[in-house]
Amino acid sequence: MLIHEAVSLKPYNSFGIDVEAAAFASVHDLNELHAALGYASRHGLPVQTLGGGSNVLFTGDYPGLVLHMAFAGIDRLNDNGLIRVAAGENWHDFVSYCLKNKLYGIENLALIPGTAGAAPIQNIGAYGVELAQFVVTVEAFDTVAGGVQVLNRNACEFSYRDSVFKQGNSPTLLVLSVTLQLSTVPNPNTSYRGLSEALAGGEVTPEAVFAAVCAIRRSKLPDPAVIGNAGSFFKNPIVSRQKYQTLLQVYPAMPCFETEDSDLVKLPAAWMLDQLGWKGRARGQAGVHKEHALVLVNLGGARGDDILLLAQEMSTSVLSRFGIALEPEVRIIYSGATGSAE
Ligand code: EPU
Image 1 (cartoon, protein in one colour):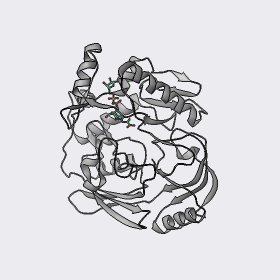
Image 2: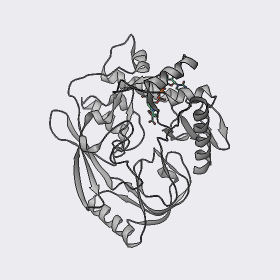
Image 3: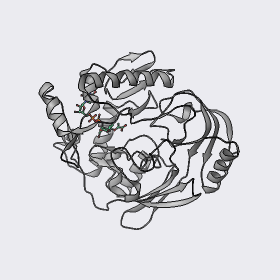
Image 4: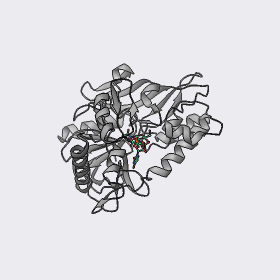
């Protein structure tokens, strides 16, 4: 049976929030996708797609159809590093597969939770590397036109934690697979300070980068299988260099990351939250991770609204202290909303 009614989404979101979807379908191919979308249309249900559920916060029961994108398969398209991964494949397993098969570049993106199909939606990035650098095409189902579209990298409109697949409340492009150009020769990227420090003194190979990234993530970020979370809850804000200079006068230790635009810098939201003493605090069952101020956690039985209230309190405090409005990185799904999520 393809469509299930009144399904708990607890196993399908890494926050572990116990909400229910009115209807739920795990789709493995285009036939199942067509059938599920047909069901939603006949019943007038909004549709929300879900990959690994690792970047999403449900604030209540979802009154529509949740489409769990479970397309499978990894295809090496040539001997020069061109590879296609289906939306439902686990991202970290794919990174490991590539490394074992001597395909390099995405080792910095090891251990990011979620599926390969979600990777382009928020243009996953970590430790000096962004997915967009490797994307050749993204194959997506266009729910308006009713067919498959192949988007090249420009058409994907990638930017920091953003893409054409994320825009608006009702994205109409559902990611089916991603085609990447990887390198067949090792070319380790150690531009991220914390990573180069971790690698200092040893041989710098893609395998060493993979191991160091895994170790850093394990030391700082909670494993969603153990404690519910969705990684960074907020984006790092991008501000003018002038604003940063003004802040530096008051907070001389404030770090910043350079961006492609020399007039703009990215500020670590975690650092600001840490200055405000948020690390390790809790409001009921919603908490801030004790090792990383940007990560909200479900301490057990939290409701989506509990997490949201805590997040609002945190962003209000950053606004009043630093004059900076934090934007959520996690996709918040209010009851009744339509769209695409990871
Ligand atoms: N910091 C603090 N206090 C903390 C945590 C960090 O002061 O509690 C400081 C650190 O000392 C460092 C700076 O903040 O100077 C940045 O911290 P970190 O290297 O951990 O990176 P981040 O900016 O917090 C971003 C991504 C992560 C990604 C890392 C590594 C966003 C929103 N987050 O975090 O991505 O893994 O860089 O590249 O861009 C995610 O998106 O879910 C995610 C985990």
